[in-house]
Amino acid sequence: MFATIITTLILSTISTLGAAISAPGISTDIQLLPGQYASDTSPQLLHTLLTLSSSSISPSPGFNASLKSLPLNLALQPGLAIFALPLYSGQAAFSSLPTAPIANSSIPLAAQALSLSSNIWIATTSGSSNTRIIIWDSVPDVNELPLGRPTSLSLVDMQSTACSPPCASSGMCSASGTCHCATGFTGASCETCAAGFFGPQCQPCSAGCATCDQGITGTGRCLEPIVANAPSTCNCLNGVCGTNGQCECNAGFTAAANGTACGACSPGFFLSSTGDCKVCQLGCSSCADGTGACTTCKAGFSQDTSDPTKCDPPQSVTSSGTVCPDGSFSNGSACSTMRFFVRNLRGLLEVLPHMCF
Image 1 (spheres, rainbow, N blue to C red):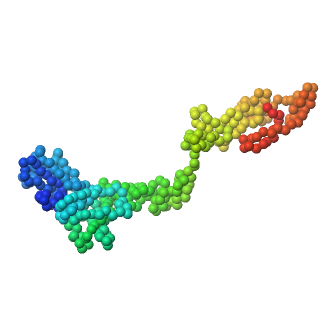
Image 2 (cartoon, one colour):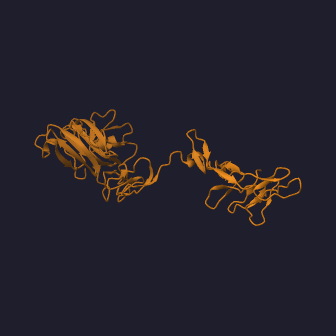
């Protein structure tokens, strides 16, 4: 911006742009315009002020300056400096380059002169007509703008031109050349949607959806809904987390040896190939995972010779020594037939063909 401005010395009564330098015993304060100043800078008065240990420097808003080391590089920080009077004089104020778009807002500029840092442009409107004008360089007198004599100016946008390619989708370019993307966008130039957003405007996936058809070309269709009280929320492997944070296990499951809730089959159940806990056959107190083959029969029962998953009940014998057939039992002197009913895991009644145990 200031490449075409020749570094000069001007009295502080004329301009407040840059920084004022002074020292005790020297009656004249000097206003430094933006530029570089070294220890061999002329004239002698400026050289003295730059090298004198008692000198002090007072930068105007938007400038950082220190005399601790030379050369002194005096430049406006990324943003816009405004001045109450033409030729960068009078009271000054500074607005730094924003990191987010100036959305639906208009900031009044009580200014007669505008100073822009390098690689910055601003958009303004004028008066009630809302005439929009883009400004790419400093303006020593706003009356020189192609707006006649503007009664008022308002700032509606400010951005950097340092990003290549330019930031897309309302992204903001920083002075360092990095895009700051609007919510929902990502990428070096904000050219794509962030995770959880979809469509050309990168709108968020619907509430209650853990994963949707996302991306610039995505439809937003929910692919994975959020499960209320999901097992993972309370370390519940095979069950449901209750509202109290406790795990309610699926049928047949219990806590595993390592403490994982619902991580193992309860006694009398075995882990099937489908990942469920199924009950062992009647008369079997423990059975092998996968096959359900009985490993321990209940007292009085014996392993079935033809079906390894079964345990056979003991034979019932009458007082006379008669062996009762399957489905009957000894009432002492004779064999009686009786049907037994039990409630299974699904709450239904089923008939047991053998005697109770």
